[in-house]
Image (cartoon, rainbow, N blue to C red; front, side):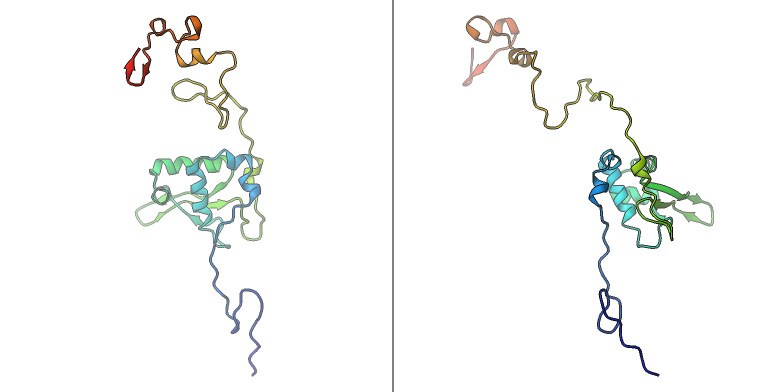
Length: 191
């Protein structure tokens, strides 16, 4: 019996064997610019990539990763990893396929479905694209001062610079340190 000629084309060497290629996680621009992705924290984004890199083309819905292992991989506490998992499920990047089970005989981690990839013959659900951010509220930082968006370095137009810096101007436009309680230092000498 004659042996069939070796396959030719992309991904096959001259003997017909598959050429091993490096795997990668692709993050398309439509994903990176989605409202859901923008709303994620750096830890949540890192966790998504950690789960997505475990997908090899046929195991979506069976991607095993527990909070301890995720915390170790991301170098964060397991509680932080657990909160990141919860947020990724809430927004729609992940779905829990099977919850963890710890018994005397078995110790199985949670199994995840990445909604960006299809499961079996089913197409990707892309649940995160249906997520809408909550209505904007004024955010406050811990000290109670309103946060300033990046790039917005304008001063309050109604407050003069002298009031912002804590100095009051006396006659002839000079700083009145006796009134403001500040002493100004000029070339190492007190004035």
